[in-house]
Image 1: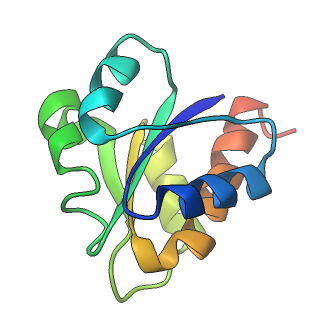
Image 2 (image 1 turned 60 degrees about the vertical axis):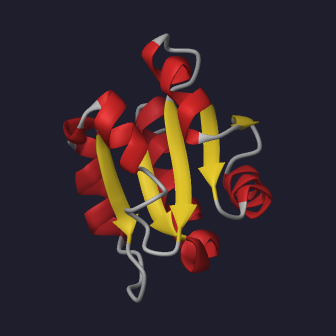
Length: 122
């Protein structure tokens, strides 16, 4: 699995992703460079963080990839919920935004779900 990371606290996001699954290839980039990576299937997913979790983290990608492929998994002021994130992943989303102050909690939940999906739940 390959994941592109952009937005705020990219290094923190990378560390959280790799702590959850060290077998993931992580590419630190920005939203504009991630667009062709996603469209050309050079990466499987994009994770972005900002103050709100849905604004600057994924707004450019919503316009370029489409709203149906993007979601905020954890907004500012809320705690991530595994059930909500599973639903989002099961809807086929490939772009995920989160509030930067919840990276340490939200990213591992997301990576666990994506990793289970990639391995068929094994």
